[in-house]
Length: 410
Image (cartoon, rainbow, N blue to C red):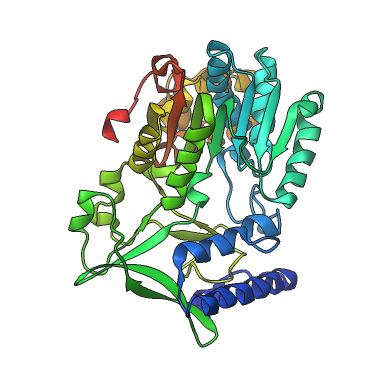
């Protein structure tokens, strides 16, 4: 077992039992595959094995700040995130005469509640809000959240286990693409090899096999011997399926990642794969399968090209900070702070971020600290990006990309 495990908070006995059950399934898959399992197949099992995977086995690992959670997403930091995103959703709904919002991977349900509540406030609540969810435990959690937060809109919420053959909607995916299994590539002296998983004693370890797969970017040729990186066939397949079924509308994906030339830059020679457990990054992504979230950053150039090849338009691409500011986050913050002491009306992101150290009540400090994290370049503001894909939607009309659009960098 990895040495780091001794310094980590110990999983509960029931959690370790579930992990052991999942490990037995992974070992069976290894045996069926001749003793070697491609990493994307391992990641699929670790995250999505029915009843045992990280997202399908239990619903308590994320969404809170407590010691039992593994990570916190933007909607958990501040309800202003969802309310700001709703401004962009409202614009597309109204200008394109659409009546449905579809959210992938709704997590705790807080983002759905924030968006629905704000759309209702703006007078354009959709007729239907569909959540695509594969986890029964998460569906139950989402139902509880939405019943409590927006009871008067709950009858508009639907749960889908898959996309319909054709639909028209505004699609939302916050930190969805990063949770799709990736293939790992490892550079040797004689070329690239695919990294997979084997059993060594009682442990799972990495092992490489010959492959015809290559990183998609010319920049990858400069990666040194020993470099490890990822490619994203499942995320690209997901985008193609979305393109095949979205008859009209726009899809907004918020996630951490880079354009291709940055993704495969030599300075990023160990890739972006990470496992998160109890707000820590694990040294060993194979530790405790099913108990840690495994993620990879997004190659947004590949996402954009896959969308275009499948017939979608790239409507915009920018940083999370630019998108939220374009959609009126600062105005919402000013209104929130005006409702509690002391009132403030920040004129810029820099002024708002500086205000986190200004004297004030707890309401003031909570609001500004959360928004600082959403906007600050060293936090989520720059690492997280927003990409909009669509069909039958005017790209020039999307307010989230009015300033600071970086589509030309893809």
